[in-house]
Figure 1 (tube, rainbow, N blue to C red):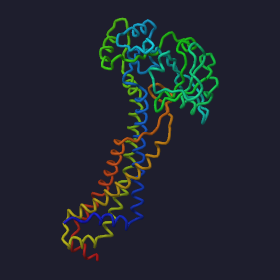
Figure 2 (cartoon, rainbow, N blue to C red; figure 1 turned 180 degrees about the vertical axis):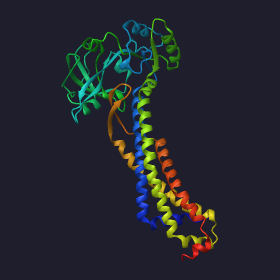
Figure 3 (cartoon, rainbow, N blue to C red; figure 1 turned 135 degrees about the vertical axis):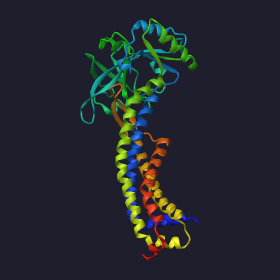
Figure 4 (cartoon, rainbow, N blue to C red; figure 1 turned 60 degrees about the vertical axis):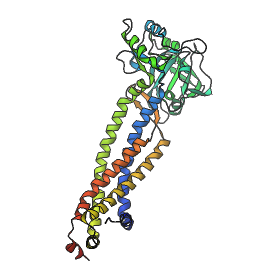
Length: 388
């Protein structure tokens, strides 16, 4: 004969004050755990969504990012004639030779300088990235000192608004447009003509070559040909894979930090649950004896008290997840360890993170309640009834 589930719920309601305090502690731990995972997930998703599976990024072999890469003009010309490169409607190849440099701009909040990606683009760059759309002004003219800034850059940095001037590379660049690339890393960049940037920053080589595959299934053949060509010292990656690699170090750091902090905080939450449950056992000794006298077995008592502790964990987990979901409305900006540039992204709550957070909360409830539940189940009937 099992103890009714309503019995556990009623006992939690009877001890409202201690229940609320215990739930609050667990909810705080779950909130920290979930938000750190959401931060890592948001970073990864932002960078992965930056790329397209149909696009291939070609960089110098051994380079971790475009910032560290260099592709000579002759090598870029070899990439351009590969048969796997798609051709656009106008007959031109969907390939862009791009340059990436870092410039320091003052942040709006505190005025401190931080790195921003300045990307030199080619005529096909916008067609290769359909997620980029102009929201204000116009597109910069190729061959001029005009640039357009991503929306996240405009929000986070000074001097990059529409019709403002950015001084870098010993030249002044006029911001003639503002673009939005959605939830991607491109929104944290400034774009202009690649050849003009190469002259201004005295860069004789490109940072990367980007092209659209004629058929996505041809990527292995294109990769093998480019990486085995003796004239080249290049490696090819799908654009999605390239940007996923960009997030790897930062995301791993955030997850390790989150798990470490959560483990420390969870010790306090589990001790709180344990104290709450021990107090419940001490205050209900006579009640436990009555249940045993009515025919409930030790395992029924064990399950009933363990259920109360798991309910504490479940409620705490639900509250923590609900609170952490509100952080999705916040956009944060941090330094990408791979490119050493500022990157804006949002907290992202996924079903997997919610499941992990709830599992963690139930785990805290179980660990915090198992010892008090064992103590309750082992009470002697006669000794327990004497407390009446």
